[in-house]
Image (cartoon, rainbow over all chains, first blue to last red; front, side, top):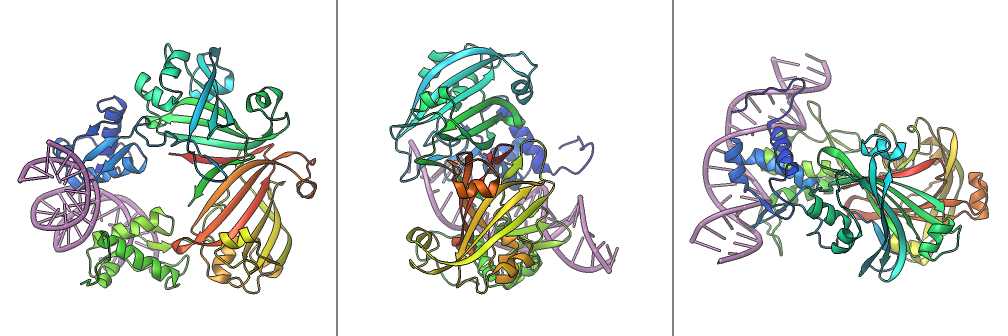
Length: 244
Length: 244
DNA sequence: GAGTGGTCTAGACCACTCA
DNA sequence: GAGTGGTCTAGACCACTCA
């Protein structure tokens, strides 16, 4: 029997259940890839009907936080178990699909957060960050240069070895090596000219138009944990988006 | 009591209800902006429980085909009634929001469908199309040049007068003047250099990097009805996208 | 065959809107 | 106060997976 009342505004029961599930996921009670208890079990624990649990789980499944598998159970979504490892990469060859994806690490360094990075990561200016740079090839064509920035505090000991060990799959690494699960992201896209450095990395002439992708990635409760900036050669590839 | 059985594979009842609702929407039984019958009413008509109707309506609401308003009813989504008239435009100023949106029509012409356009619109090559060109300004800055192509057969008599009369709000015009409701779209983005023509329209130097947006817009049952191609000056604006 | 999520029902009651 | 969508329950049964 729940005793607390919402301070203001109406919060349905299933949302409070959802909040409790999110809290437990965030605390690591159930790890990515693992099953959570069955709906009947959860209903008994929370002393609500199965329908109410289903509604809470349904919303989390809709947000790709949980994955339901009929006949098997409900699982914590995992970047390691995503079939393509590409769930957050919207780039596709103009003809055909992504058959092969290869990342080449350039470097991993400690840097100080500038004012903008700090604000976007909700850290103090000057906070210690880890900056990782790499290139990505799709089907053998190197088309993306990107850099990622994360808090050095949250990702202690993050260096080239850890990255290589996880085959450059960053979100999968964050999740298994640092227990930081990326659940959503916001991207802003622009068209820019390649400067000399990036042109060299992508084997194009300086001044070539590139698609600039800037991303903020969030963990549970919309806490920002990673900034990413990518430059993509879109001469034979495009960014695909569905609008509804 | 339903008698037909699915030919193969299991189709739950609520999906058949959903299909029937879609059919009626597509046939124009309920028009954009109008309410559909209440859930209790629909449940009686279809001889199912309210819960089953709710599930069908819920999926259509999730696809932005219907809009539920507690205490008032469920309405057919309408581009004319969307608050911002921008539901499909993902462009935002880097600082601030879209306060004012203004379109300037360039021309409206009949053209023949090239092989690609024809294929994407599921029409024969050489079919008659209407091509509309315009520029768009956000908060007084002209940042987008775009052209739209639709079947001349489906949009009979589409000329500059019709467009102007609807204040350049194309999807709203398709819906009210031609009973064609756009419900979804797919976009592909690239970075390109401005050619002389487009540079002139956007008041930029030729060679300026622009964001190219190519879109296929669909009506009910994923029937393609419009092709659009836009070139955006992203020096002070960006394309915003949410990834989950 | 046991266990899981998925569907469907009937019914009670709640939050909200509008006349 | 009538009517709408929104929540919640309890229970039956179905589709699917796996040992």
